[in-house]
Image (cartoon, rainbow, N blue to C red; front, side, top):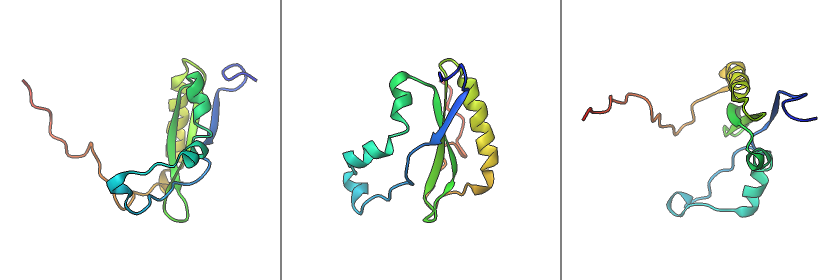
Length: 116
């Protein structure tokens, strides 16, 4: 049926595969693979196309230690539903989350901005 009338939220994997390892040298030159990009965005683009609110929630890692996540989408103007389901997913998968080997917390130990 119609999202928002019979269904409050839709849950899908964020992408239909686990994260792809970067090829050697991609940190210097970048990495683009259009075919892979289309495959990876299979579950994301429909919501983006019609402007549905959505978010991705980390849910753990695969056997190689690469991240996996779930996507939450909801009806227009129901962002609170997405946030509530996302918060529950975060709580449910809290034990599965691990900090990756290379991690920079951009919000940690930041000084207050200087006042003009």
